[in-house]
Image (cartoon, rainbow, N blue to C red; front, side, top):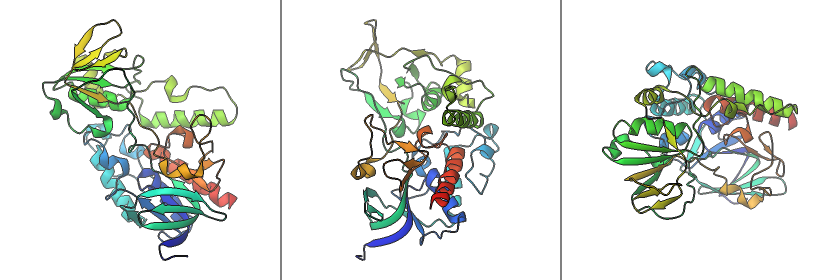
Length: 356
């Protein structure tokens, strides 16, 4: 073995909320951070995707329902207890220190390859040979923008690039997307600019008293029902898409939560609608979601005919030494949320201990 190669039992790729939760349960199972397992993270600072989100973004649940295992998030007393991104970043930073998870930072993983006995993880800090690899890289680094005919010469940005409504004062802004990010960004920008909202279908707003707590339980119930072969309840999608946090409720009161159908094409100074009419815009914000950041797994050749990686819970069916967490319901109920990441990580590590 060369000096740049190290052996561990587990390599966790990604130091965000899913990586932290996995590290907690590996540590609680008796493994030593830095010796038995390592967490590799490409970012320079803790916080995962939260460190790259816009500052006024809020969680969809109060702090007591937005915590990772072992340590409750300190309470956020303002705004009905729904903390801002900075509060979550501070919590994740302290969480990492509290459990001495020994995250290797600014370490980008380029590949995971199969070996006869171990998986080989290639990174900017050399190679790691591991019995198991947990991929927890999330989706934030892979923003998705749909393709439309035509071209727009004004400013275009994605949710991942948005920072502040003040950048759009007095402008005409088109916001595309029907999820929580679109609704929160629309709520902010509509206070300082003329906004137009575009969604694929009419937006579905959750009742005012339903937040991330209920969404997690609904997603969990759906997952259990599907495992038992019971009829699909449609889960969260059967109830609604958008959590009515305070800013979105305020936008509703101002009468700006009205969406239009998708436009037909882009034009230089705006868009042309399906009926042939045109509207002009200074900026377009694409709140159109993300794709899983899984390029490092390409050498394993795991994608199925539909482009996804077939899974049994969090374990890859084709490569059982590989586990995925935090990418959405397909890797565990609500696993891309704080509370969901914790529960999924618990099941992941318990399954490892049971099988191994």
